[in-house]
Image 1 (spheres, rainbow, N blue to C red):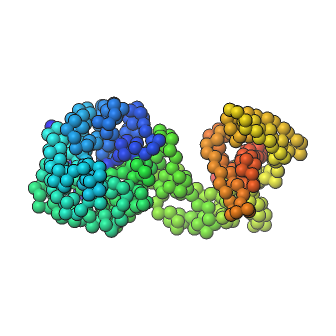
Image 2: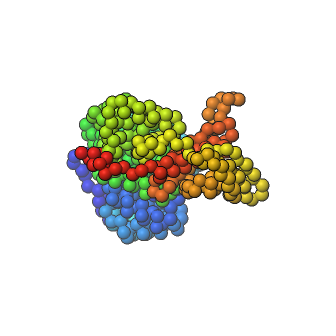
Image 3: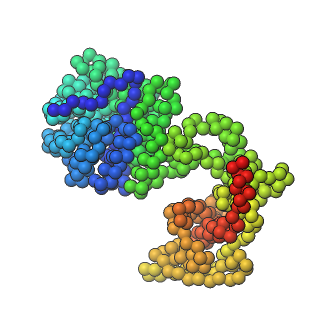
Length: 527
């Protein structure tokens, strides 16, 4: 048998149990191959998590292969696998852990009345006996055993205490009280941990047992409930990168880690998470499973440190603490973003222009700011390249304009004919085929303008109500390494799509045609 390897920590520290490779992978569309799991496990090791749950070996050969790969190559953290309270599962899981330097066997069984009646068809006594028998069996293989009372937050309190006592007496070293369906609230969660911990305090060895929280996000409370569990005595939090997981997901590791760091004076707890690696780990997972995070996602979203409001930008220019409670480099971002858009004020525009080497007098700045506001009516975000173009006199160019288009979608291929007016007023017509009307349309526009764009995302929705409603198309495209967003609005959604595509194309063309900044201007930017 092996000895548990996580030592008592002083000052107090919350253990991070990462289940991205198990519970996270159960999120629809997020399955990973064994090799991908190994890549992610290495990243989690670098991130500093205490425990990595690699999978559910009894469920698939793929999970067994993943555990074998990870066990041989990831040696610092505890490696856990999940097992039902079944002898065959436990035996399979124990074998899967043979190569792990620090193995943990994680067994679970439902305890709530709803699950006992409809899922298990077992009585309270039968569940209790199964817990005793299978936790003891797991402990006969491995000394580090975690027991999870599935659906704990909907289990009778007295019975949950009884089950926890039985698991500890049978040899469990960690007791997990999961909010399996994201049902509970922070106040209830805090009280639950306080009461269960008090209810087992007289059991031999209970003072050495770690209580753990595993919260789901069905009501958007996973992080709040995990923090409440810590207040109630939990010393391990189970979470996933980007909060991926079943249904609405799990507690997000980046959010719980930064909440404890930013509010350390309140919680008097921290984690071992290497926080500057948070963003790179998040982005790795996005690439592996193809699930991007929303732009406004806390910590790792593209807008997490972005400021557009003029009031906020003015405050940030004076002191970043006015509108930021952590530094972007604390979590792996290079810096805050001053996003220029229609809510931005003169101070932010002036600051960006100076950074680009343009030092303007008050009258000049007033004129440029008016031009900037006009440009904001045409596009949502004004980039540095747009400012360069504007300062070089190119922003007033109209670019390509849509004159007409014809779309036919018959059979397996769609056809598009577009007619444009080029920047000189000449007519340009091109045709293209595609897998659908939008694909054909974008192909024809690319041929007509000579601009090649790689589509990352495409969304359409209605703007307005009833007969006055218009369609809005939003694009995110790549040109080389740069990412651009375009918007178009029309009563016809296909036309709106064309306008959104041209929005980006015209911007790129203006940037290409703008003269490069003079050496003097570049020098001024660094003066």
